[in-house]
Image (cartoon, rainbow, N blue to C red; front, side, top):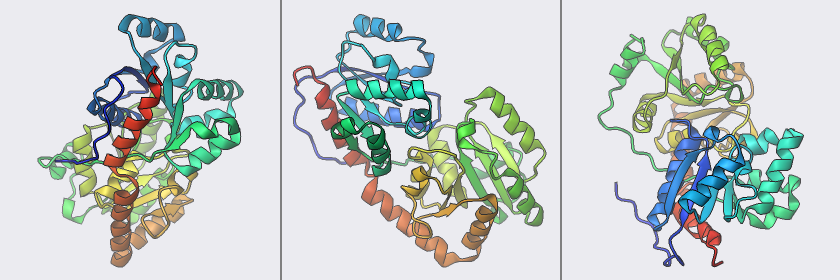
Length: 358
């Protein structure tokens, strides 16, 4: 796929950039980090991704910076990654995640650390106006350095992917033509709340065997993953599948009836945005991160209880005009607000602030 974007003026000089993020494969953070890395390398910089979860203390990062001669840094998540950049000799920028601004601010020590990260950062990126607004209530002095840059979306589903084979391998033997597949994509951890809909969905499946819920994602919290597996064993119509490569996941999304998000907290869900771009309806829990993307009954559906989720799902199945409107408006929303080309240009301009000559 050929993607065109406006050329930027030549950079003052190419930089070696250390990019810290939580890089568990097939998670939103990993996908976002890889995309931003590509943006920066397209501008001539060298960008090295390092998994923040593998770092034990800031001294490791200081040694890495000295050894590999990094000129600048970038982090996703002010606490999980940002704390390791504190006190380093290189300028860095920060990107808000989801749990940092929504959850970690409730912890006094984490809140203090994140404030220090914002103080030292040359710039910070918020995916939505809401994230900037929340950050401004906590750190008003940093308002001037927070830039709003929505995630850019570029979907490239695997054209050779077989939904039938995938479902068969997952133990789902029903005819694909009769199924209404709902898919929930998330790393298995409590904040994503993948069990929120399980019991209600299983009851619905008992009444209508043609509906099924697939939960797809990597193990992030091993203890919680066992809890999820045990719960699903006792609820028909709900299946748990390990993560799959991004291009296969996007191809599978295209086969589904709807994408589901039941998180307790979100920054900006890449799975929701990709589903919108792939013209698949979205049903999402009514939380600030999701409501910042979805306008109810316009480009998606928002639910507040498992019972409301089932009610809205039935509407989506029985009201074709509603489904068509949501799909059309969602596609238009992505093209207007989540341009991959605009995201590329913004990061390429922002990173110029990290050049030591500035």
